Image (cartoon, rainbow, N blue to C red; front, side, top):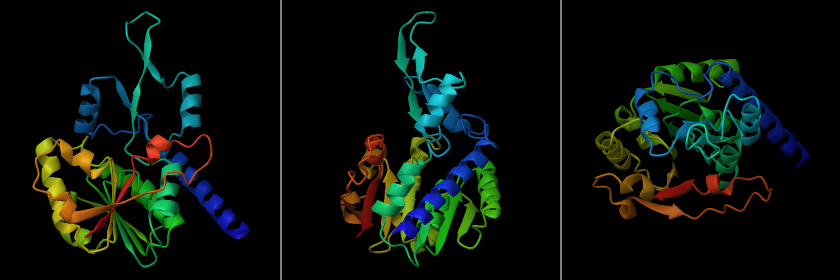
Amino acid sequence: DDFDELVVSNNDVVLRNIAEDLRNHLPIEAMFDSEHQAIQKIHQHPLPMIHVDAFLYDDDFVDSLCEEGKMSRSYCTECGSYKTASLEFISHSFSLMELKFLYQHVLPDLTGKVVVDVGSRLGAVLFAGYLYSSASQLYGVEMNADFCQLQEMMITKYQFIDRIKVVHADICTQASLLQKADVVVMNNVFEYFLDRQEQARAWEFIACNVRKRGSLLVTVPSLKESLSKLQTDIQVNQWVEEVRLNYDVYMEKDVDREALEQIHLYKIL
């Protein structure tokens, strides 16, 4: 048990080192200029919102950036007054806590299994899968060339090349990869990057190709929430069955239970 704990804490250190390396290659908002649509959607949000990548910046890190004046948790509702309101944060990555929850409590033993992360972005799901699971192969499918380059840099530096592969592509060109996947992960994957018609097309492609009986689908937010605003022919109840998760596995006070409750697990029927 002591040895297992040592390995796990060492893996935490490796992930934090990767996050630090990535922070050095990204602007503070962790978005590239090439992400036109996502940037535009964040700016169009009815309430002020900023992108804070949860893999790169945990709450303590955000606090320290606020103290340094590099970031703020609030905005002024009337310029020059003391009336302030909390900014809404959006992240397109899982935090370290969420990644550990995913691999240690949500997913079963992945020995010999294939994991596909749709919209792998910084590669957090891939790196955590390498360190916290025995998955035989972890594929990241990412449309943005800048993020693919960053992921490749980390894969080479940390010698993950034997089990991680990044595919620079639209997921709608990857039918065979989805068909062989045992686990598909989708975290805030389409809403900020595609218009509604494209989102509907992408979801229908996923539903058509993620069909291996007993394979697993992890989504943030729930399928119900993701599909509610879209016009699709997906019969969710005929495609998947939701698996109830225990969100109380972490008893520490500082655990963001709300974030964990956004993670949903489905079994393919």
